[in-house]
Image 1 (cartoon, rainbow over the protein chains, first blue to last red):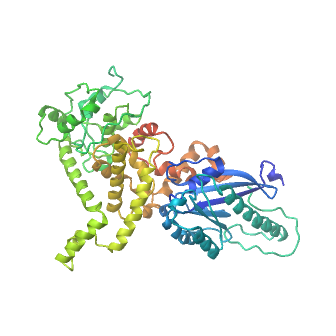
Image 2 (image 1 turned 90 degrees about the horizontal axis):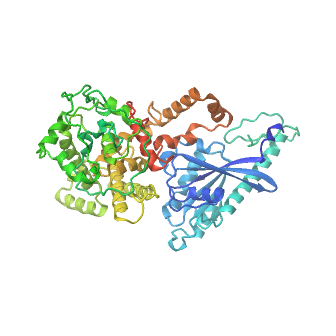
Image 3 (image 1 turned 90 degrees about the vertical axis):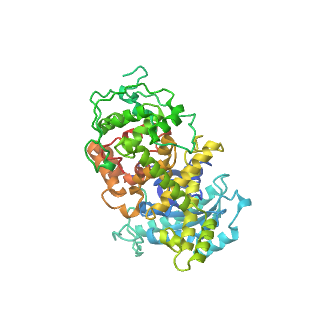
Length: 216
Length: 368
């Protein structure tokens, strides 16, 4: 337990924001972590991240949210982006059909690079621009169901559903991680390899090993 | 040192000429960066000797021989407003103001000294910075006599590129139709190589790239009137940025357009703010870090990041250990943008220009 002394949170979850450039990832991040929105923001180059600590079912969870350039060219370079991510919010712009059509591309990208257990959520951003809508909410919902993602329409501009989106994904991650932590406790000193898609062997023995999850 | 704080060498008439003729009027911008130049310039004592910059290192030693400069004339302090006169002087190959031309033709610049001086920051006065940057970037040929010729050549090249590459699909389709009628097998466009690919794909890719460029140009220094807003100036500047980036992306199909190029172009454009042909040529020097296939070679982004990490380790091991070992904050997380954008997003614009003075003055070239 000694390693928890310095932290005012019990869990640290890394969440990545992905989606085409210009869909509003950076503004979702700034709205959530700083309650700021900037209509004239610069395009993101490389990676940026910010954190916010919140309560999930009574536990202090620190969300470390990563934002990156949307342009495909940057994927290879920022491969470390996905490392250790337990959740991803896939963002499209409801006023740009192309960004919705590219959701499949992003899902493929995730399958190739992220942990297979990563929790996914899809967000149709810019819901404040309803008069310019090019993707109906039903279309978003249908795709989300087909792909098994949770789904919300959001607006970083007027803050609609931004909190809710993060709360939803972080709660889902928390459930998985706490279940895993339990399983890990139960699995003997069965030194599991931390890494991508490790299957946890749920052997029904109860050892009292320390939980080995995200808090560094 | 002269009374206005400029070193003598900077008062040389050399700096008062522009390399471009600029029929394309991009107006002098009223809110030029205001930095208090605390940099002290030492006058150059030795005669200047022209050494080609690295980019044009084909002729290693001085091509200019007449060592003593005759003119130590005071540069007109309002030289910004005289740009047109100066442009004419500089680019007229008939040498109308023969006198000045002759003086310049004898002028001999020691680029090493230029590097040294410029690396400490160039005093304000855009004319000087623009010329110094051009020299540092190896843009003008070593021989002053060739400047106007080279310039005219580059300008006409760029004009041609614009005509050929910025044509909208409808126009292009019309031309294609015409040429298809003329010759069903080989259109003249195919033979020119410009449209040799599957045209549908080409258009599609184009529109995606152009949209991306458009989006990023709109987000280039949104806080500066020079680039942003609805003024005629800002609009024409944005159009020029867009043209340059589109032409570049088409001329460099392996690189195309990578987000961030707009940020690299912005300071160059701002400083030169003349005919776009210059920036386009200059941008070509910056393409390597954006080229995917080069990511892993010794000058690629991974190698540069590794060098930075080693550098940090050498100079501040404690910080290095904290970042890389303890907290696992690898340099690609914080330095990627520093490197690819040459610090343009880390400081305000005016400060970036000063930093670029130093970056561009590195004899080994900017770090990228």
